[in-house]
Amino acid sequence: MITNALPDIPRSYTAICEWAACVVYIAVLFRRVPPRRSVVVSAIGLAALIAVQYFDGSMPIWFWIVGMLLAFGCMYLTILFGAGTGKREGLYITARAFVLAELVASLHWQIVTFIGMRNGRFADYDWHAVLLLVATYALCFGLAWLVERGNFSQTAPTLPTASAATATVAITIVTFAMSNLSFISTNTPFSGSMGQEIFYIRTLVDFCGFAILYAQQEQARRIEASAEIASINAQLESQHQEYLQSKENIESLGRLAHDLKHQIAALRAEVDPEHAAAGFEQLEKSVQRYSAQQHTGNPVLDVILTTKERTCADRGISFTAVADGSLLSNMSSMDIASLFGNAIDNAIEATSKLADPEQRLIKLALFEQNSFTVVRIENYYDSRLKKDAEGNLRTTKRDDQHRHGFGVKSIRHIAQQYGGEVTIRTNDHWFVLTVLLPRQTGLMAM
Image 1: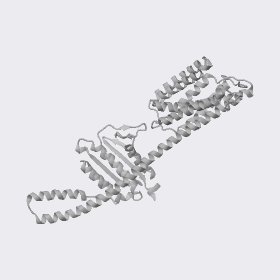
Image 2: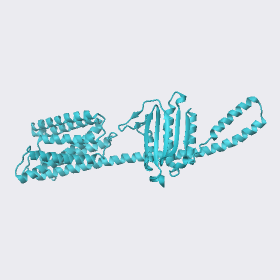
Image 3: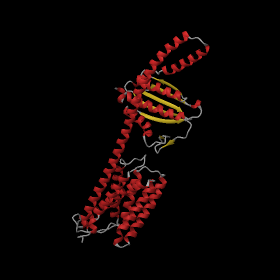
Image 4: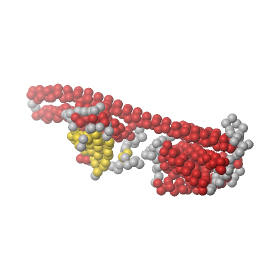
């Protein structure tokens, strides 16, 4: 038996609390549905939760667990359709929302009953109670929104693993069971026997459950960020190794071209048949192709541009570059290799798909303007570009969830290291990527 048992939380209060918890998570999640749909689904969800709560209240006590499952189901459907989540994601978020709702409902009623005991009355729906309800819910759910908005991305779906979703549901079940244990039996080591004490235990357990779920999501975000940084660093290292190998190959080809020129000159002086002259001339042009190198004033950029120019020639792409490599004197060789390598590779991939050889055009410019180092890579394209929720262009590669997706991210990452920014625009079938690096701030000023 519970001594000095407190009145039950009004059903309408519980329904509003569960609905508000759903709205908080719909607000912080990446929504894949229009805002109007979110509003309509939320309104229907509120009506459904109120109906479920009053239906549950009209049933025998043994129906309590079934009623809670029905309320959980309504919350799940509200989040699933209100935010457009996947099934596993919806279950993961609903479990968190359910614990939050339990916490706020218990905390609010604990405050209400404390004030009621001091005043000697319990008025559920007078203006004092309603005002306290609005103030408590607004404060608690506002704090929850502030806390959780940094824990979820609003530009990409939350994709919990099966183990993470299972763990979240398990934590929710344990939290709910322990927080309501005293209502089932007061004769356990973890139960209370006093009315106010029971609500204190419930509030404390729910708070611990919410804190555990928050820490779990924060850890998942950190692991995801670490994996992304590791992928970017791996690509940076790969680009650097490619630069070193390309430099060695170019040096070897330069020596080979120098030797072949002398050999050709000697052969031409000794052999004079007309049918051989044409062959020698063709050989000389081929050697000249491999001996041509870019000279921008930066040896790293020279290697990158020379290598990419040859790749473009092999694919029938017209590549022109006007670059002042001295502007990159304070950038590391790895950053130069990755920035220019990724940008030109993306342009080569796009133009290689064009059927018309005259449209296979890539232009690169590196210059100084208004105290900024400007890197601009332009290429012609003839396809429909996809954009994400922020308006950023998405990759057209099939493997956009793996390494390919880190090309533009790597460029942005490097620009941010030097206090710069990256912009992407399209104009009349021209794709233009621009990198602005300030010359008086950040690492560029060192």
